[in-house]
Each structure stands twice: as structure tokens, then as C-alpha cells.
Length: 381
Length: 242
Image (cartoon, rainbow over all chains, first blue to last red; front, side):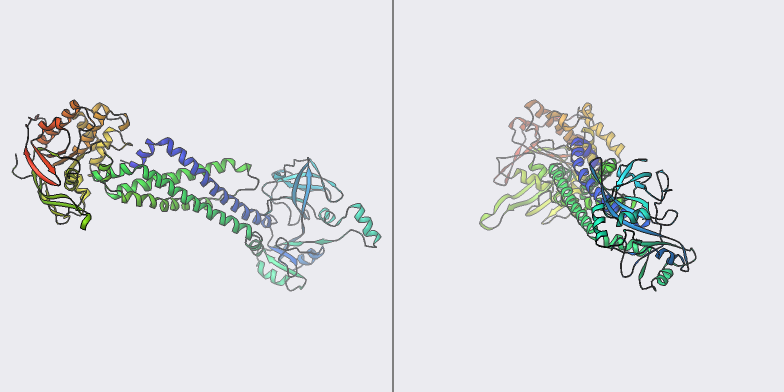
């Protein structure tokens, strides 16, 4: 006879209501796990989207994401000629904030050379950029639709949305947009007309500036990327980072504080959950003191009573966890930032929940083991 | 009647506190209860009758003396059995003043749990539980939870639980207190019937003067000391065996 099940069945409404509250708490733990996973995934996705083996950046920098990097536009030609380089492409990166329908929209614009590495990986709608100017591919999280025009830059050049990507966002959650390198350079260096006139009056040369942030290179399959990186680094004005190094920079250093903050929140939530579960189990055990005394009186061994409490604690944990997980999955699309819940992280949170339930049940078990069988008599008046 | 007592208490004493705060709850108690006997433990409040019942039920450790239950010496200056709960499960059936049924089990499961704790299978224990409930004329309430049972019904379910493992000793702590006089007599007749049918010793703590005629013997306690009195009457028991 499963006493835990019978007790839950007897107080089903109380169990469901108590556990619904617990499931909200565990749901928040799952959600923070998703936010944490999303933060790392977004950061890595940003680097992985380029499909690079090597990142050639300004000498002595960890660019282009961790630090700013500026190199001349002809670097790509130089890199392409190095032994082992299969393909290379110039890229620029810049943040931009525009207004769409009166609402601000932050975008991370990637300038790339169509047909070369650095462009969007996969489109979910529309087509690649085919024209040299004023076409843009954006992430669908921007809310922009195919054919829509958006004004970019100091002079408000109208770009037409020709393609849509999915889940292309930066570590800060901004949607990524792809335009041609030429457009990106123009947007980066062109000034608003009054500022441009003033610069010309000062005798400054034209606004054209063939600067890029990095060269992305694909290495031949039979050549080791770190060997090519070492060869490239011999040029004193360049630094070459492997994709692995770039990912480490992004996941470990660029988002380090955010990662630690969320990790701390998660730890605190787990502690709060443990305290709440312990208190619930303690209260449920308090309610059963008379029954426990009676069970002991009639001869139930401690393992029967401990089993009842542990099973109830585990039931609470399992019910709360899966309800919380279901709630998070239901409401996941409405979160402002991406939640990434992979099987591993979800399993880890589940294992932590089970351990927390087992630890939390010790408080109830202690109480139950202390119950004197004579209390069954005392309570009988 | 067997010559061997089922319950034998020799020179039993129990005191609480030390020094000037010492209270002697039981002093040099000797009693024997034989199979088939129903005896009453009576006395004013604080006379030590509940303490004596607790000592016999192995839930309160005496301060001295000797207790023999069903031929086994269980206490002789110290507990001689390591697992007193198992001992209670096997040898003692306890009927509380209030039924003390487990609220999350229905009538038949409240009875079956005692047998399952002894290792009986779920099916067998449930079958016997229903037989016991039928025997106590409360079988029709086997699916009712304790909250749905009347006082008398709940008390009969509690008696069924106490009888579940065919104990040789049945201890009852004021089992008729919550019942009216008619039901009180029914319960006492039932205990007598069980005592005879199972060759069990039944010890009943009571204040109820209306049921004195249901006891074979009455042990009166005063200030922790025992006075044996003859029973007012002995009643015949039915022959059915459960």
C-alpha cells in the first residue's frame, strides 16, 4: 500500500494548489536556465553564423566582438593569398538604432561581401542579396517583413528587406541585419549633410573609407587552422584568431558578468526553492504527526514513514518541475530574449530539483522520526 | 483456560523526575491476565492506569520490574527486545479512546495496513480486512473514509485494525468513552467475544461504571498501587472463530 499516494489522493486539491505555487518557482529556475543558455547560444551563434575557421583582425586586439578592430579593406586580398586559405571575406559590424512605426528597433548590422564568407547562414524566407546596394536581410525577430523599406544611416538610405533569418541575434539580444560591405562602409563613415559640409570646409578628403573590422577566412580541409593562424600572425599589423578562440572570447569574456549574474540568480533561486520545499514538506509532516504516531504505534517501521515523506517530496518535485517546464515552454515565444533549453541543461535542473527535494525532505523526516508513538494516545484525549 | 498468563507484570515500577521532583506513578505492580479474560483497569485520574497500559504496550519504559508478554520476557530492568514496534505489531492490538484511524485510508485499508506491515500481501490483507469488518458488522462501510464514518463505525474499524494480526494481547484505552451506553455495551461484548475466540487477554482502561459487569476482573489503581477486585460478572461468549 503506497501511503504517500493515498495521502496525496486524500488531499488532492491541497497538493495541486501547493504544487502549482512550487511549479511557478521551479518554472522560474527553468526560465533562468533558458535565459542563461540563450545568452551563451546567442553569443556563440554570432560567431558561428559567419562560418569562419579564422578571424583576421587588427594586431593586438581580440576583435571584432570583444574589442574594436579596424583593418584596411585590401586585407582580404592579402589573406586570400596565404597558403591554406580556401576562401576569405571582409566584414564590418556596427550597432544601429532606427525607428519603425514610432518604435525603436536596435539592430546589429553585418556588412559582408555577397558570395564570400560572412553572410547569413540560412534564410527562412526571401532571397540572398543580389544587388550591390540597399538590400537588407534581417532576423524575423525585428518584426520586419519582406519587401518592407527601412531607413538606415545618417542620411536615411532606404533599404528593402529581401530575406529573413531566424534566431540571428547578438549576445545582447539585438537582431542581426546583413547588408553589402559597400553599404555598411557607407553607413559607417558617411556623415549627415551639415556635418559633411563642415568636414569639407575643414579641407578633409571625401567620405569614402575602405576600412573593415575583420577578414573571415575558410581554411582548406587538409590544413590545420592554427598553423594558418600562426602564418598570418607573422604579419605584424594583423592578428589571426581561430574560431575556437573567438568562441572562447565571446562565451567566457564578453558575456562573463551577465553569465555570472544569471548563474548567481539561479543558485539563489535553487536555495529559495529548497527552503520553500523544505517548509512545505515540514508543514505537511506536521499535519500528519498524529497519523505518524498511530502508524508507529501499530508497528510501522521507520522506513515506511521515511518512505512516505520522501515519496511525497519527490512527487512534489516531479510535479512542480514538469508543470514549471510546461509553463516555460508554453510562454517561451513571448519572452523578449531567446530561451535555449537543451536536453542537458533541462536534465541538470531536473537532477538538482530531485536532490533539493531529497535534502529538503530531511527536515520532515527528522520531525517524523522524533514523533513519539505515545502521541497517538495523547491525542486520543 | 490456559494456566500460562498472556500478560504478566511483576514488581513493576515507574517514576518520573528525580529528587524532590520525583513522582512515583507505579509502585510494585503485580498482575496477570489469562487468555480469554477481559479485565478492567480503573482508578481516579493520575492513579497510574494509563502509565501501566503504556508500559504493557511497550511505549513507555518502566523504571523497574518485569513484563512478560505471551511467554516472552520483554522487560526485566531494561527492554529485552530490540524492535518494540515489531513486538507491538505481532502481539498487541491497541484500541484508542478515539479511533485514531489514518484519515487518508478508507475503512478496509485502515485495517489492511496493519497486516501489510506484517508482510501479508495486499490482496490477502484486504480480504481479511473485509472479513473482519463484516464480522464487526461494519463491512458495508469498507470504502468510507474515517470522516464519513460515525463514531461507532469508526471505533469498530479501529477494533478491526487492532485484531488484524490476531494479537494475544488487546489493550484498550477508554474505548467506550465517546460512545453512548448501548454502543458501549456492544463494544464490550465484542471485546469479550474476541478474547474468548482468540484466546486473547483484553485489558481495558475505563472510567465507565456502567460496564463494570463486562469484566472478569477489575484492577483498581490508587496512587500508583494496585488493588485486585473480583469481577461483577462474567458473560458468555459466542462460538464463532475469526
